[in-house]
Image: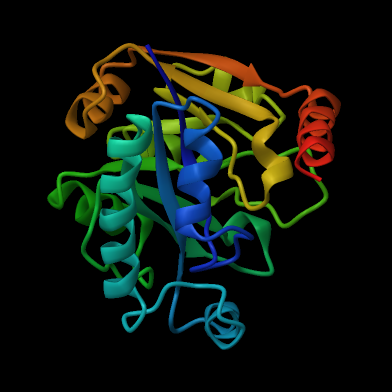
Length: 245
């Protein structure tokens, strides 16, 4: 059984931790697999151009370094922690209107894809790379933030294109997705360390990228709420600091 978090952001977009820091953050906690899924925004939209200006998105220029860094840190993760790091991105189509916004995770992909396409085309481009398409937080996230309803409104049309739909993206379980007959996955959508307290996926498979992807396709998966005893961890760290000094 593998504890996995397959929706994680780094400083290549709007995350607070570098990819190296993410490897250590999850590796020290005994995770078996993570996926680095930084935002890859549309290049033609106003919000997409703003994300590029603010350096909150992958670009054709930054993408090669991103893929190389994931590969190098993935090798270290496997050697040091026995943890699998899956390359990916979050194709990000943002609009001021919630019903027009959509985020699509591509897992196991290493070639750049332009987000300036319809969701159907994006899913098929991901599949052409041998990757998985995940519908990210497709319903109300129960948080005060922009929402992404476009995929859910097209769920019958797109059902055969997605390998899974997020049943949780953070601390809230999406009952609409849970009660549906769609394939499911749970991840934290981690941007900062505090986001670790969230629903995660537990996969029944070997620690290998292809086995992990196949477990998601076959839905050999269960969900677990991961929460740490923060005060205990901080107390231990403080005690070690006192001993060192």
